[in-house]
Figure 1 (cartoon, helix red, strand yellow):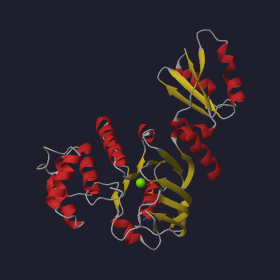
Figure 2 (figure 1 turned 135 degrees about the horizontal axis):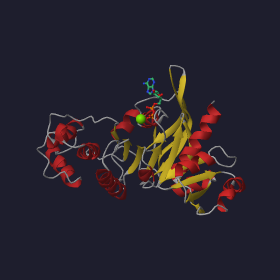
Figure 3 (figure 1 turned 90 degrees about the vertical axis):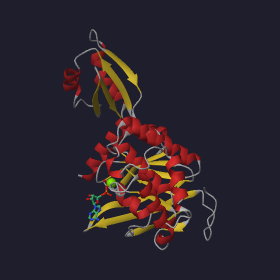
Figure 4 (figure 1 turned 120 degrees about the vertical axis):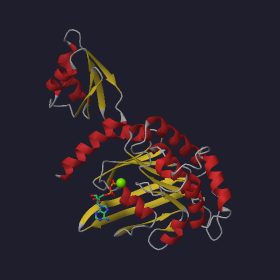
Length: 317
Ligand SMILES: Nc1ncnc2c1ncn2[C@@H]1O[C@H](COP(=O)(O)OP(=O)(O)O)[C@@H](O)[C@H]1O
Ligand SMILES: [Mg+2]
């Protein structure tokens, strides 16, 4: 799948490599000085709150939007001057379902195959049905599929023209957990076949399935790397306090110096901060209390994102 296509240089090791991308709408910068690198065969996760610039970035990468400044390449092609070329080799799955609700699964796939000039469109559509386990649903109208099956069909349409890079914009938003898991199984299969995948998501469990991630807020990349690197880089210490009413514990601990994060975890309270000694001092009085247990635990990716968000909000104000 990653073999060189006619007229194209062999795929570079860095499938995406951009520096200093900036984009403003109506005078407001929504992506600022964004740099990132995605290697061939990687599944790269794009995380961040709504409005943080994920979709805008994805659209700049595939040449649907021109950055105001910055430079970069996608599939070895210049994002400023070769966007038409790039679009021919990128599968872009937009946030909203964009297939025809009143065509069947097979008709949609054959239509996409024809639009993209895929040789033998009927055969290609059938192969996509096989590959994505859509068998048995070929004659079903796309509009009547459940969310999970719709996404599977959209993914099928995306890979029909044999792209070398997939840009998936929140492909699993609103899809149930089982279908999300299956969808991710397919993404991993495609990556194993040599496709590179950039995927935006809100789900922490999906972030954990990526080879590398970037967390973006207010148009800025706040952290980048493997999940383990991002968690370690945040330098957070956390403990779990259990044995008392979580709501009462939270009310008591909230705002104490050294406590920057506080969240209920079932019957316990999960507390964290960047200054380990200060955190320890904040929870020390609880250790002496009857029936209460204070145990160190590992910060989660969610802790790290919330902490990054809080700090970036502070910088923003
Ligand atoms: N075409 C546009 N014109 C004006 N504002 C836009 C346009 N596209 C996006 N925005 C704004 O840019 C910001 C970032 O949007 P977006 O990239 O869609 O974020 P995300 O995908 O992370 O939710 C938002 O505030 C959004 O309203
Ligand atoms: Mg978006």
